[in-house]
Amino acid sequence: MNTSKPATASTRLFGKQWALKSRYAEHFQPFYRGHGVGLALLALALILFGYGIYSLDMTIARLVAGFGELGAMSLRMLPPSPGSWALTSSYVHAMVETLAIALLGTLMAAIVAFPLGFLAARNTTINRLVQFMARRSFDTLRGVDILIWALVWINVVGLGPFAGVLALFMSDLGSFGKLFSEAIEAADDKPVEGVMSTGGSSLAAMRFGILPQLLPVLLSQVLYAFESNTRSASIIGIVGAGGIGLILSEQIRTLELQQMSFVILLILATVSAIDYFCSRIRFAVIGARAR
Amino acid sequence: MSASASHANAYANAVAAKRRQLWLGLLALAVCVFFAGHVAEISVNKFLDNIGNFGSYIERIFHLENGQWVLSDPKEWFWGWKKWLALMGETLLMAYVGTVLGAVGALLLCFLASKNITERHWLVFGTRRLLEFSRTVPEMVFALIFVAAFSLGPLPGILALAIHTAGALGKLFAEVVENIDMKPVDGVLASGGNWLQKVRFAVLPQVASNFASYALLRFEINVRGAAVLGFVGAGGIGQTLLEVIRKFYYADVSALLVLIIGTVMLIDTLTERVRHRLLGQERAA
Figure 1 (cartoon, each protein chain N blue to C red):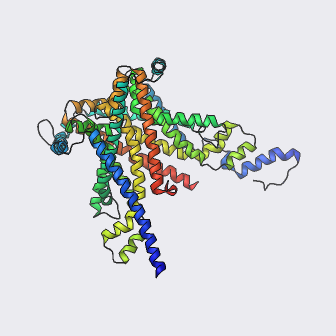
Figure 2: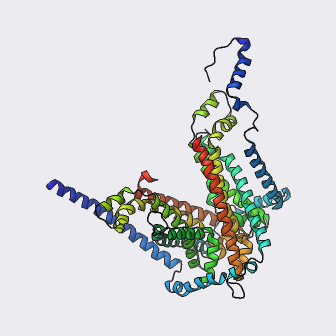
């Protein structure tokens, strides 16, 4: 940039600008040049957005009326209040149930996904077809939302927290299977070669070559999942699969807003407590390095 | 000899301590699991009695009313395809509009939540708590509240998606912004730029492709989310799905599930391709 010679006062401005323009021609051309495709895409995105606003009936009148109502509702949510002691204990019970659902669903999924993860990993699978099928099955399990799984399991085992546990199990099996197999594929080959070269079987290679690399990664993924499952478990009650969601949706339908805001605060507090404990455990087991 | 023996001893002690910790941890976990199983009314018998039902349920949703395998008559299977495709389109559009609104919100807020761009600590703190709140409350809960305020339809669903998206993306965006190279920022400030110019000319060019990639990832997640928002009356294909599951229209359940899963996978593949290109650009730049 600073290679040009010092110019006299009269030529400084024009000379410099001209020199710059000729040297960096591509930066001085009009903006639309060279951005044609990008601008077209942007226009398309904006048109789609406009169409969405229009076809989904997001009129200003509805927005204004709705936000007015929302404001009035927010005022009625304050202060959060549990209502009575009996209700408080029922909230706490529902929250414990929520945690139980999250714990069992996560743990079952982790246990079942562990061996399946080896099948779905390129370096440990039996053959390519098995690997492909396992991957696709995991994708399908994940593609179905947890609330849909909850509805399906309610048809099978009836209303209640058990259906919730199984729903969490199904959708977590899909995500753990994928995460575990990716972690196995990312494992370093050298320890495996070491075990093999000292005469270890392939099972021994997995146990002493891959597993020690794997466990911390898996544990941290399971702990993350437990935290997010606590959140999921608190909504599956909306369709009747146990947990605090049932209470929450009832309160919103009957507009008991002070109690509703209390329950939401209870959920938030529990989730952040779980978050705290999970990161403590992660820290204790894995150390600061792997965080 | 004695040195190696003491080494072996030390090793054994270290391993024993680790083993003890492991067993204690497992014991604590077992107690939790037992308690949780009691609370969640898990019964192995019930499960074993009903596991057959799961198989037969899956089998039944893949058979038409006349008992034929669904693929024998795809026309009959997808009898409502016009209506269902329209609903799927509405779902995608909801996810799109929700993602755009949320991403714009996140874009506006993320700079305020980044310590290296915003000097006022109370502003950073406040923005971060706001983002945290909007992503910790599940979007279903927002949807329930918004349905009560805005009445039924896609509008409350979009707003719920947008708020959750703003919270989730705002955090990710702020993390990207905090990792930028600060030299361009110094350059703009040194030549007298104000806060807005700093963000526009020093920060945005460094983060734009990352932002776009995260927004696409979120769109993917929101398509899944939008498909079930209808369960609480917030628009999209979920309402119909809930009805056919509750009313035991078996073949329709599988048709809708195939439609939803297929669409989700298609969107996943497309966005993944675009994201790889975006991140490739980032690396090349």
